[in-house]
Image (cartoon, rainbow, N blue to C red; front, side, top):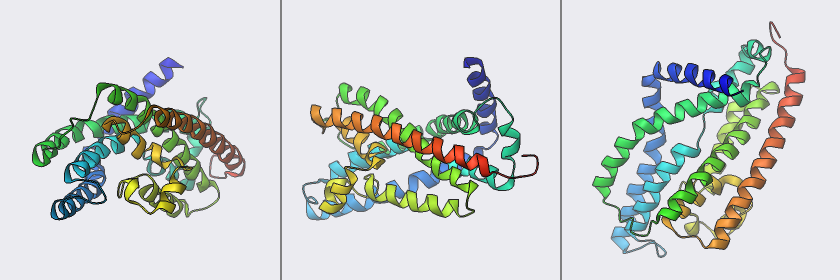
Length: 265
């Protein structure tokens, strides 16, 4: 199995380097919104002194950290796999002795992510010198805890997106469904605005959804704003949601493949 993943990595890593312009477009797509949120909320905080207790530096450190977490936990499975179901090119992958979504597509995502992070780091450094954030509250323990938290968040995000992508076995509107899912992430993950600034109803609902795991939870870990109890609750929630999303994906995939029909299938 190790040799299979090693070979898949070599192939997908080489493939990602062939689409550098595509990577640049994705990078700009991922950076524009958070940087806009950063600029807007920082300006408001500077004008008013603070926003419900959030100072300008709080917004700067929050969104600077969010940029990192977003790069690690996001995925593009809908873009690299959805069309394969719709145009029938999945047929060739189904005859291989590996799971198309949990091997090749997964490694493709990781290779894409590593290359994106390499392009993202110099931009983050430039933003650091432009906004001059004060990260004095950040401790090494929080950074170390955030690493498994972000990895866990990525796999939960990937499995949910994979389940949605597998809906392409039933409908050609899968991209629209995924856009709705992305809107939920925007609302409940803390990407648009830190969750404490959202209405209490949104905060209460967010506690029971997996979206905090993608951004808000690892951000708070890095910034050192969680108690020991909250840290444990976050990891427990992540493990539970990973189990739920895995079961959901397996059910959708199993039933979807049964109804799959294409030339060569």
